[in-house]
Length: 525
Image 1 (spheres, rainbow, N blue to C red):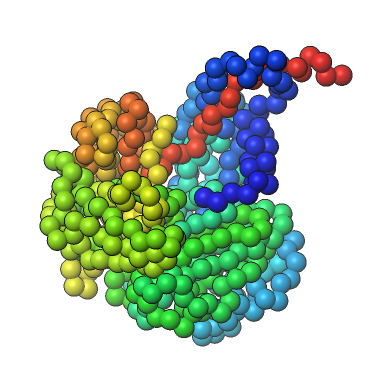
Image 2: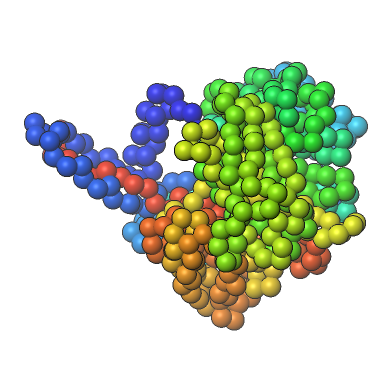
């Protein structure tokens, strides 16, 4: 992501605060000639997560699940909480308020719906029953809560001390009928300053929102850029969107442009402050789900965990460069890397969104897409829309290009029958340890190690805690240096057609801290 010098300075300060690294150090005269010291990995001491507003449907049933893995070296004290983003203390902003009301009136057509959709009002109070019934549990103990209807607000979460390393919150919503019906799942994410969402739409059949959540005490200013098949779309109010402190702003994409396009790439850039961002993609006929942000633009991308029973897969790609990209398309199958017949390459024009239907590319076996630009010279972002089911029972989900698991990844809200893991190692054989926590209502943790052969995707029947009751968390820990990518698929217990997929990046449990050259704290007076 693009970073300014100021952002780098702020990031260094935040790193010291997060890890508690406060000793003063100064290089001696020969330090420049000494070999660089290896960075130590220490548990983070504070982390934040943002959950978008789950739904406005009266038929929505939303479950929140929180889990912090046990992390060696973490502090013994601490706590975690999730609070509604109510905009308390925010200054009125006529532009932001007017835009939100216009969006809601266009989508819902009534003043009452405007009030229920707008999270950014300074005097807004969460309605009775709107707070999710969730108190995060101690490390190693998942906790869950639920809320019915469309009144649940966006959430701002913070965790400190032993609750912070790897803290993960999943928001899962089931909507029985109507636009976007199906299982909509999203992992709550930290705030940032730039996001890419290939796979959004402004088509007549789609109702897509960009949900922006501001966790800070000052307002954030955000630009939303849209790119279609012919390049940048002309937008009317996409620049300078104000998101008030501790508030959330849902932005309906179809209010930003008059262009109706099936495939759109959304670029969210924060001018001032920081936000959490996610796209909610709701289809009149094909259900709906959350579209998480793609990994940063890169010449090599992995989209992990296309379900084995996918009936249709649509690949959407975009390069922000002026130059075109010719991507090599390969599928990491259970038996190795293969080149899909008829889809060996994908030509992506600079600044334009490109999409292609890959059909039932998995052919009954779970797989992951591996996209590569020659020499990695042209960075690309990408996502796939996956369909399962047939006819009126079709349901959709999205898998963006993912970051590697890193040190550890965490998935929550799992059940023995409703959750599966897909792990791929595109560039070498890898060992991965998977641990199931105790359940929300009891059970004994269990672990198992798996070998992922080079170039393959393995659908893992993950271990379940002995005597499991309720849902449980799964942690993935690579035991080799080979990069691995993973995703988790959830299937509704009530409707087998309803599903959602979440990529599993590193859970930010630890941070690398360079070793101090010389401790001068004894000189302080």
